[in-house]
Amino acid sequence: MIRRIPAWLFPRLTGAVAWALAGLVLSLILGISLMAWPHLSWAALVGPEGRASNPLDPRSVHLAPLLVGTAARTFLMSLAVIPMGILTAVYLAEYAPSGSRAAGLLRWLVQVLAGVPSVIFGLFGLGFFVGVVGGGLDRWTGDLASPVWGRPALLWASLTMALMTLPVVVVATEEALRSVSVDLRVAAIALGATRLQVLLRILLPNALPGMATGVILAIGRASGEVVPLLFTGAAVATQGSLALNERFMDLAYQVFVLSTQSPDPQASRPLLLASVWALVFLSLLLNAGAAILRSRATPAAPDRL
Amino acid sequence: MLAQRSSDLGPPRQRQIAFDTVTSEASKNPVCIEIQSLSLWYGPTQALRSVSLIVPERQVTALIGPSGCGKSSLLRCLNRMNDLIPGVRVSGGCRVGGVDVQDPQVDVTQLRRRVGMIFQKSNPFPQSVFDNVAFGLRIGGCSGSELEGRVASALRRAALWDEVRDRLGENALRLSGGQQQRLCIARAGAVEPEVLLMDEPASALDPVSVGRIEDLIRELREDYTILMVTHHMQQAARLSDQTAFLHQGELVEVDRTDRIFSQPRDPRTEDYVTGRFS
Image (cartoon, rainbow over all chains, first blue to last red):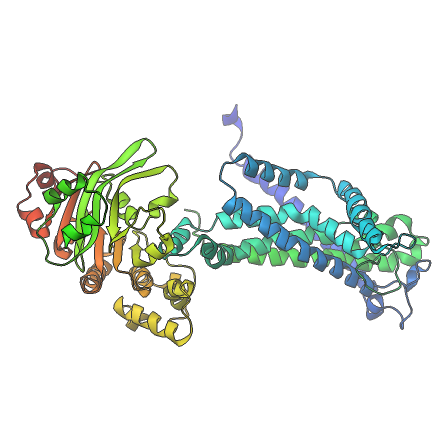
């Protein structure tokens, strides 16, 4: 049966599918760029002459506050997810007794976290960060009538995102730590290095490109994610100030709102296209960064054969 | 000397007798390493069977024997690198410069600074030449101009200085294979250990590099006690003062190198050094 399949079939079939997909991606990027091009201008970025954003008037909303909001929540998320992820991965790779049930359970939980739908993260963020942590803070400071922390805000959205992207950082870091050559570890130990010195001077520096790849992938995933933000703090328009306990504007959220519930679809089209283009460009940029780091992570890999 | 040392090992045990049978008259040098009735198991498998050996200071002692005879296991006992392998059990003892290596109280990181190790496969860190040699010194708290001076002198001792003096900032992985191995020797030597353990240090190198490593070992002999595992009979004959032959975990014979190769006492040694089995 298998012998009857001509030899040319599979190279052509697999090639055709792969190139069709590549064409699709390229035409997506190209199409969005062409459509957005007429609307990309200085005014689209900073808005017409200092007019503040007005939620009822999409024409007054511009890209700058969206970019600032997205950057802020991504930055805060990184501040939380990088140390949490790296510490967890170091424990799993270095200190957890190998083959122990506890380590296996922990690793399994991280995988579970990776599979949880983002809407669940959103609800969890609302219930735990906004309700329990924020509400707790308010109760502690004693002002329940006008909540300062117990409401959707930049900080809670960032922490929710950090939790969501934690598995990406943990898995990449653990992988990177484990792939550091045993020879290097043995060499350092034979020179009298303690376990901590081996970790700090050999393992972490050599795992850095792999870890950075994980962080960039996490940022890439988070920067385009909308759903958790619906519950935890994104807003169509703000007063323009950026505070940890205030709502914030966000690129991906804006795309979602403008494309599904704009009061005036025709008027909001320029901003929508510009936002979509910015989002695609951002993800291209992050992916390129990850690819560059990954190629550095494997220096002088011998070619096949 | 010997009697005094064994007396502070505690109550005299059977290994006292074992000593007399294995001590070679190879050297008048003071004792650096004394291994006494050392047995080692990997799980249920016994890799060393009551090995006793005296290694004199500032000499080269070669460990020869067929693959799997326990040469490397013996080497790794002396700087406790066996600790890294799960399921290892050791009985008997070894002392390096009077310190009981197997003592659970012993600070293994201190021990490993006194007993350096060179591996078969050179394993420089993917960092600069300088940082490689500086590694052991830095973790010992050395810095500044003292660090620079000691790195330079370690490279000189390893006969590498002239080749790398202008490339100290370059990644060590760009050195040639032979240079990398000499860099590893410089790195181990930088912390000024008393002993260098070498596990087939030249077996993965081209003949020219082997020659340079051998010259280097001859020079290092002035400063260090060297215990070297080798598969290469001529190398053992060329380099070592004393040779020990191990077979199936047992130390069959130890003697001055010339005697091991010219008039071995045990027929197994003779078979091995004449190439009748390997």
